[in-house]
Image: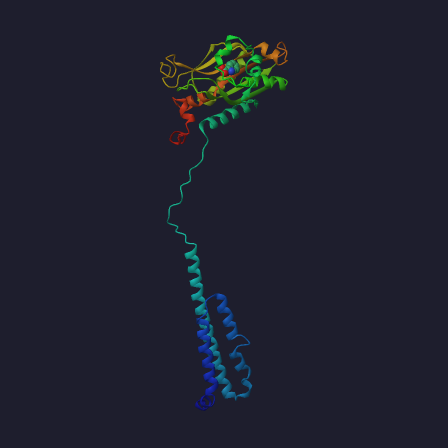
Amino acid sequence: MIYNVIENDMEILNEIDKILEEAGSLLNSAKSRNELDDRFRAVSGKKGRLSAILHNIGSYSAEEKKIIGSKSNEVKNKIEAVYKNKKNEIEAIERQNFLDKYKIDLTIPGDYMERPHKHPITAVLEEAVDFFSSMGFEIAEGPEIETTYYNFDALNIPANHPARDVWDTFYLLNGLVPRTHTSSVQVRTLEKKSPPFRIIAPGRCYRYEAVDATHLFMFNQMEGLFVDKNVRLTDLKGILEETVKHLLGAKKTRFRPAFYPFVEPGLDLDIECVFCGGRGCGVCKNTGWIEVIPCGMVHPNVFKYAGIDPLKFRGFAFGMGFDRIVMLKYNINDLRLLYQGELDILNQF
Ligand code: PHE
C-alpha cells in the first residue's frame, strides 16, 4: 500500500525533499542573524512552500495525507534544526568578532596611577589654618604688592627710620613694594574690621636676600592678630605655645626679647634646635635654638594709625616664618629643597 502511494506521489515527496535541500542551502549561506531569520521565516512561514503543500493536502486520500503530513513534519523539523544550528554558528562568530574587536586582556597589569598629594608647605599651612580656625581666628588677605604706607609707615616704621633697612626691601619703579612681611595685613584689617577680632593672614613675602639654606628671596609667612579689650601677653604666650605644640609636637620653647617697631614689648619665640637637640650646630648657628615666631603686643601707634583708640583696645600679633615651620616639622635642613620641584624629595611627604 505504502509503496503504491509513494510511487503515485513520488513527485510531491520529491518536492518536499527539494524544499528541504533548498531551504538547507539557503539557511546555511546566510551571513547574519537578520538574514538567517528572514530566510527562515520565508521558508517555514505561512507563505512558504511547505505550508502551501499542507494547505492543498485536501485533494489526497487519507493514506496519502498521512504520508505527506508526516514527511512534511519531518522536513519542517529538519529545517528548524538547520536554522538552530546555523543560528548558533552565526552567534558564535558574532561573539568572537566582538571579542576580537574589543579585546581585553585581563592579565595585563594596569597602568600605575600616581596618587596626588599636597606640597608639604600647603599641607602644613592647611593644618595651621584649621588649628587657628578652631580658636576663632578668621582668614584675612592683603595684596602681595603693597604701598610703603601699609608695609612700613602704618606699622610705625617711618621713612628714613633705620628700621626699614632690616626688611631688605625690593623697591619697584612705581614706588610700590613686594610686601616684605604679612604685617601689612594687620593694618588693612585694623582699618576694615572693628574689634574685637582674631585673624590670621597667610601669604607670600619678598626680600632682597642672598639665597642660602635658611633664606630665600620669596617665602611664606603667617601673620596673626588678636585684638580685644583685655588681651594680655599671657594670651600670646599660651596661644603660641599651643601652636608650636600642635604643629611641631612637644618642643622646648623660650621667649626672648626682640625689637619690631610695631609691637611693644616685642618677642621671639624660639624652639630647641631639632637638628642638634640643643647642643649647637650649623643650622642653629651654634645657639641650640631656632627662632620660629616673632611676636609682641600691638604698639599703640599702630592702633592710632588705623584709627583705633589704644586705651580701649589691646592686642597681640605674630608673624610665623612658615617655610621654617615646615622645615622643622620634617627635619629638612635646606629651605631650597621645598621650592625646587624635585619630585624625589616632594614625594616623600
Ligand atoms: N613682620 C615681622 C617680620 O617679618 C614679624 C612680626 C610679626 C613680628 C608680628 C612681630 C609681630 O620680621
